[in-house]
Length: 89
Image (cartoon, rainbow, N blue to C red):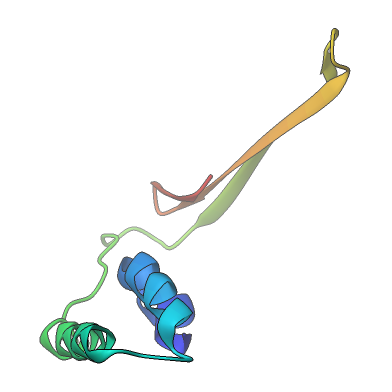
C-alpha cells in the first residue's frame, strides 16, 4: 500500500483491487502479486519528468454558493497544477 499511495500512482487501481483478497488469497492472487512485483522491478529506473522549469505548485478553486435555485445546492471545484500540468482536480 505504501508503494501505491506514496511512490507509484500508476498502479493504484491494480493494488487497490488486489488488496481486497489479502485475507484469503488464491493461486490467481499470488500470480497477480508476482506480476505487480515484476512490474516494480522492470520500471524501477523510470521517472516522471516535468521539464526544466522552476517547480511551481499552484491551486485554483471555484465555488458557487446555493447556485442551483431549484435544489438550493452549492457546487465547488478545484484544480492543482504542478509545472504546467494538472495533478489533481
